[in-house]
Length: 397
Ligand SMILES: Cc1ncc(COP(=O)(O)O)c(C=O)c1O
Image (cartoon, rainbow, N blue to C red; front, side):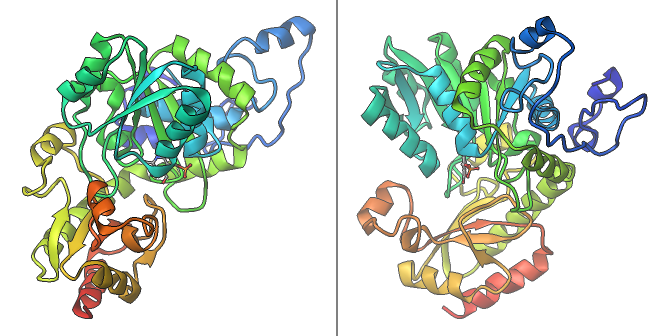
């Protein structure tokens, strides 16, 4: 990437991802290199290509031009030295965990993690002898107290699901750094436009690019970004063995979606905050969990850590509990009941009747979720149409 491109704002750089030259000119859109193997003039050049993530392309599980464009684009936005794209967010997360942990190592992780990540850590604990301590993650002293001589990793999410608690990344990562422990941050909900964890000391940033980066609910992809080139190389070697590589077409779709990330994120943030404020004033709603609102427990932290916006995901508690929430999601016409987020469409989830239906009200409360909690992942539709939909559904309760 030229010095000129480096100097551009993130929104401009996304529209101009790195593209290889083709006979003296360059394609404006990133081409799809679907072929999985590359030919070499001699054995020495081929042998050299095995050497690392920045060598010549050899075989697409090790690296592919379209996939590398995505890796370089996300690494550039996050301020990392390199990245590894994977076939899903979980592919990226498992590549990082399996590369960095071995039997007997200890991990400190937030208790409110995305369910797939929580399950992956539980599996590492049950089957591979990795020890995991879960912390609330809102107090650096809690992390300090959990440290052991065998602690290798601190695993955090910038914003939690579904109640949008904000993690004090500089404070928590600071404790890990003092102890020589690596920090991994899932930055899916905030995107590098709202928060760049490497600037706060993180060693690895992971994304479900399936969500905001791709942005159109039409691709599964994941990316892990590394602050340090040596760590990138170490995880890349393991990723090559694991084989959760991203397909070039999926990389291309993700890159195409990312070109509008700046416009979309601004719209997601503005609409979510606007709707959160209106919902807070509605009699059918008891609590709105949006860190941009003064009543949220992390409002001050959000002003400091996420001054440009807090993303598009937040939750509301409905006065009528489980039945009201179930009726509410059933009455929506524009917003869809679907288990994802970060795309152009507004989606809702009612954890108590879907993803967490096996939990009692007491167990839900322990997970920070009420029976009447509904998660909203606000899309880019016109906010007045979204409000009309929410209002008519609330009116039926
Ligand atoms: C915060 C977060 N991280 C990781 C993932 C996993 O991503 P994927 O579904 O792309 O594997 C998700 C999926 O919902 C998520 O919300």
